[in-house]
Amino acid sequence: MKAKFLIPLILFIVLVVFLGIGLNRDPREVPSPLINKPAPAFEVAQLAQPNKTFSPASMKGQVWILNVWASWCVACREEHPVLVELAKSNQAPVIGLDYKDKREDALAMLQRQGDPYVLSAFDGNGRVGIDYGVYGVPETYIIDQAGIIRFKHIGPITMQVLNEKMYPLIRELKKS
Amino acid sequence: MKYVFLTITSFFILQFSYANDAAPLVDDPVTEQRLISISEEMRCLVCQNESLAGSRSDLANDLRREIRTLIKEGKSDEQIRSFMVERYGDFVLYRPPVKPITWLLWIGPFVILLIGIGFLFSYLRRRNASVVTTDLTAEENKKIDALLNTLSKGKQD
Image 1 (cartoon, each protein chain N blue to C red):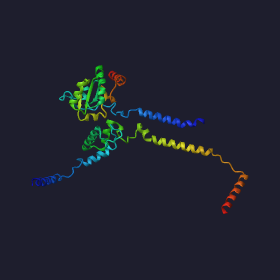
Image 2: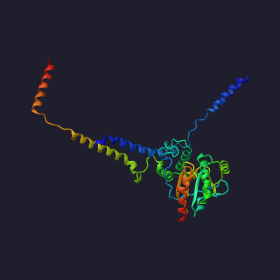
Image 3: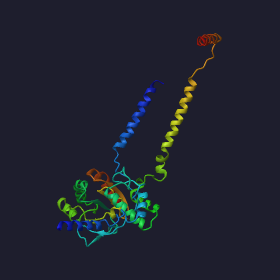
């Protein structure tokens, strides 16, 4: 066998390919155990109207989007125009969950950048976030008519994610 | 005279401020001990190279607070672990459970070790087989004897 000297080279190339794949994967994207599970129940005060509360149970019967955000989160600011676009499309109502934030800061941000949310629930101490397995804001969930989480996106959603993943899924869920 | 009085008074005030023992860092050392033993086995999802016990990230603080409440509610270690896994997946555990999806993770290294040993043995066997041994002729034996004889004579001299 003449080509024997090539074996280390081939092994090396295989190793490089594996390392390359490893480098290009986002370590923050941990598969969520909540997919296809019922969205955890909660009831907290709303952001704009503290005397009213919000609970996911009130969204039963429609496909909706839960977006976890905060005014201190830089990536959320980056994501905001995409959310405004999403709200304009009228595909599904977007509910915000204002995570570990100060009311006045959050309201100021919505004032400045526009408010894509039907309403925002206020999770001041982050307790709701823990039930939803939130570890990096922003995070976005699509929840179906029966209250089952069908999709989770960690990090800012982009137009690409919106067009390629979220819109098709929302359309499909609406059909069923 | 005024200064002397002040000095003496401040001396007594100082005595008072020493009167308390150092407060313990935590209210409940038993809870804290359990918290540490549980959270050392968990990954902090924000800084993934740190354990939940060691991380100072905001989320880790909240999760430790949550675990503390669960301990006070009398939950077992197992219940607390499943509380975390339900929310963040097996990824939070440094020692994920053995199940079909983690088989490769758990036994993969041993499989690779076995393959390596297999390769080593087959290589050694092939190398042994390629060594050709031939018997010496009578002539060669005589030569060797002669050489050895001259060598041993040389040593005696």
